[in-house]
Length: 135
Image (tube, rainbow, N blue to C red; front, side, top):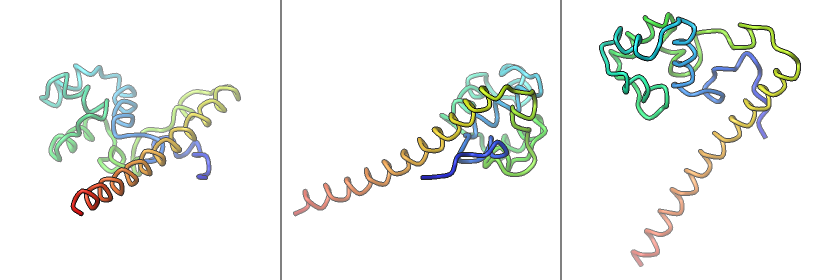
């Protein structure tokens, strides 16, 4: 089993998605989704899709997004590099809240690992079914 995610890993690839990082950076800049859409020259629904992880920006929009949000493209994509500090660093949290956040990050990491495992099993199953039907 993986180690629990450390607070410094709040926005890491295992703990957060592109949309999570984008939303956090947008919130810290004080921009609404509509404000950000206007600055990037995209529709509001495009920003929503990016933040909901149902779409990702193309390279040129990613570069503009990073500039507007004052974070690195690398951080937006992976959680590494220049980005925003974790919520724990932004406000002082009680021990109970910190424990809840730590448990949630751990569960999210486990969910990502399980989703990847399920994907590999589905791929193997499709290959097996294909070979059975070909026989």
